[in-house]
Image (cartoon, rainbow, N blue to C red; front, side):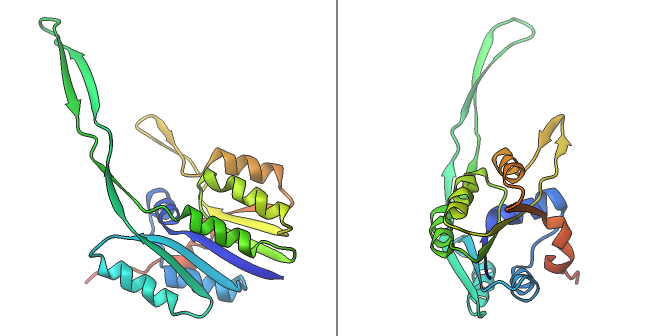
Length: 205
């Protein structure tokens, strides 16, 4: 049996940091997957901002580890569409219209690369470990199963939080439904369960 791991770095980092409060040490994650989960290859998909030498060096070091493959792209900033809001004055009732600056988002989409690599490795006597909570990969997992993959393990965090009256989750309903449907072949593992093995140690000086 061969095992391959595919890591959506941004999605995994956000789930760990925003939902569980810890930063992922990517080298420790690679070590965990290779030594503890017997992965043949570990693929990382990430964006790197221009001038972010620390992250660039971190993933360059990862790419030099046997069994690790890094697919990286530049991060681009794009402008969110501003919102036009109309609000009535409490005193005179006159309606005032103003524009709300919605700021910028940063994006570096490696979904195509992850999808192609996953399908290329999909076959009988293969198990996949996919690190993401993104529902866009539900179709990819189904295709991998159709190609004969024995089992797929989805690593993310499916917990929910209520913030300012809003329920927040970073784990897609599509993936929840897929895991429930394919319970004998698709499995969920919480990032919290492997936190001890992949958490970045932050030293305070």
